[in-house]
Length: 173
Image 1 (tube, rainbow, N blue to C red):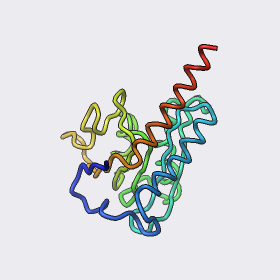
Image 2: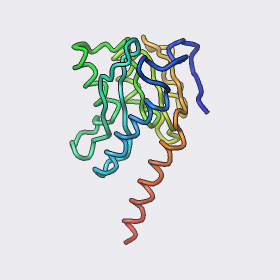
Image 3: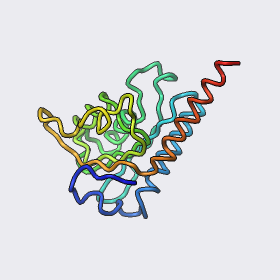
């Protein structure tokens, strides 16, 4: 079930060229699968221009391979989108990610002035958007953005569950 955390009209229909938010999340899931094949936590993200539907960026988790603790899928996708637009402000862009963003990624979205966030599965451990914190609603932040959660939540969650179950199984061998 999808849950809106804002009354913003940005989520009433997906951007032009995208028939549904499920198709947007499927694109992010492809990135998550790529991360998993690389041995990274399978999290994927895409950034889409809300007005045109243009895909600005897509990225998968990469902290291990890059030896970079900030190389989360969201951060990498925001960097790419900024480069594509020639601007670090992403007011008209929507970030779609397979897992609820952490506190670091929330901060990056605020600084980028992201236009909206769509995510799949909640992260009970480190989620900073709805699970452990109402991140976008924090009173001291100078930017707020609408959130749509639960798009392909089961598929997104299952991707992570399978990955970590496989990791545990490998450790037992």
